Amino acid sequence: MTDKLANIIVSENVSIRAALEAIDRGAVDIALAVDAEQRLVGTVTDGDIRRAILKGSGLADPISTCMSRHFTAVGTRATRAEVLDTMRARVFEQIPILDDDGRVVGLHLLREMLGAVVRPNWALVMAGGRGEGSGLSPTRSRNQ
View 1 (spheres, rainbow, N blue to C red):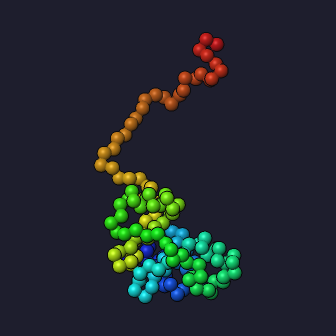
View 2: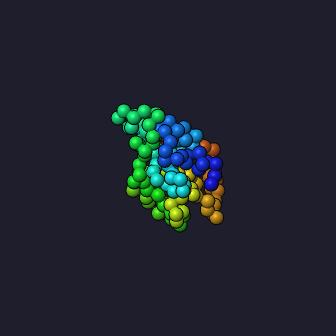
View 3: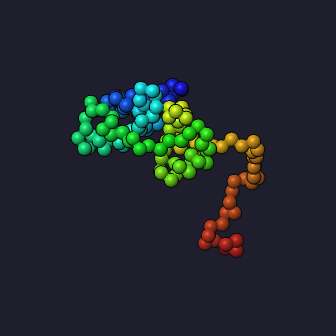
């Protein structure tokens, strides 16, 4: 497990404050709650926490009061296209990657998936000219 991923994984029994600290540390706007066997049991975002606080929860309350147990995740064999389709359909910016036992092995981030795609062929196009237009404005013609 990478350090980046370890930063956002929390026990399902931590406080809302601890989940907020994980969200801040990870800088990916989500914390992943796992059980004693490291299986994903819920997700919590800063928005989830904000809504819980507005309803009266405190920072010392457990994240179980605001985490989503009905999360979307993908398996390790999900293709880039499948993940992007899911993200678009559900308007997600992150999707956890789980192994066959439900343990977190990664996190897909929309901002990374939409980054430049490495292609084996590339081209550089250079156009000539001095960077000057025709000098004509839309209301001026050559005959003026």
